[in-house]
Length: 521
Image (cartoon, rainbow, N blue to C red):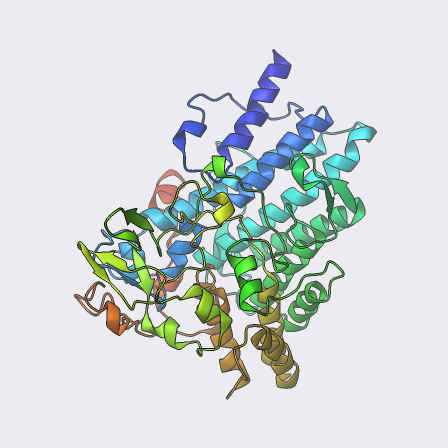
């Protein structure tokens, strides 16, 4: 009976932490997890826990986790058919409250994952069998990486930008390192959260570096995995840890370390390479088969993978053929950011792929955002359905981090050199003007759709400009009142750039303090 319960628990972890939204896959019954009961009694147990941890990490990317951030920005306009989906985060007006479904969902999903990570880490500490320790240490290293990733995301969304002068007193998010269902947490300081992030990453790096090359038992079709780093790695690697460290050090304004870790990944022996032709870009961003992804997590047709589906909504009828029916479309701002030779504009913003259907009418000549239109190998029907392998860390971001870090440290020449490598690969032409301003534009061009924009705006102390509609789309986008939609701007000090602590969390843990600008209720 004890063995059966253990297998049910492990299986439940695997299913509950997948990226699928199919409720039929989630059990309607559960068992109680008893703290202190050892569950890692065999290599199979460890492999199943590892599978659950990686699935949990995968489920925190794409979908609303990224779309919520993107529709806040100047890059997308709501269509007249959007049905107020993401409406409050798109407008960021008086209706953006601490009860917003999308921001509270991101909080809940990350803390749900952290609960799983903490259980896995506690189980690792109970393993004493010498024969199981190597596999246990891999599980521990992967789990520490995943926990650090969640806390970095939570801190970026629900805290102010990291200022070394005030981080020791600035409130961030609750720091929960042990599973305790009855615990009522308080908010840790920003410094405490970031200190925990780097502690987790340091330990993860040491554990994964010691492991070297392994057979990843939870994903046998991938065969041998080099945990030091490899393109399309199906699990966190040492290179992935370094990539997350590069993000971390950029956040805390320690630019020398940010550039160093980013360049370690760029120059890794793993063989990452920027796509530099339209064929290579298609292979990377549509087929998920290039060499830019530092991590590429397992996906299959049968799992109902969550994608970034707001921007395409491909449908078809016998009479009309295929057409887009999007919730949000690119604004003129993002279209204007590229020159016509830029491979990203050619692949991600096609004008003539399919018409756009709105209110029963087909419109032509509208540029659409197709970066996440779907991998044909994962497509379940005849229409593109936005299913992709999850790629949470990409090589191009390391170029951006290194360039920004050099520029912020005053080395414009080194920054320009790094930036030129990325722009040359994307056929974007030579940079012009102030180096830091060019770097900001390159972040916009390269990471559009990836849930990065608001983090960048906060880090730079910038606001958001208006988001005028494409001329061909003026009849199908929301524009009334203009101040909420196409004409909405956001000041650099707008309180809505820092998300509210969910009202439900404050209700059950009254010691939690709300962020400025939001009601405590």
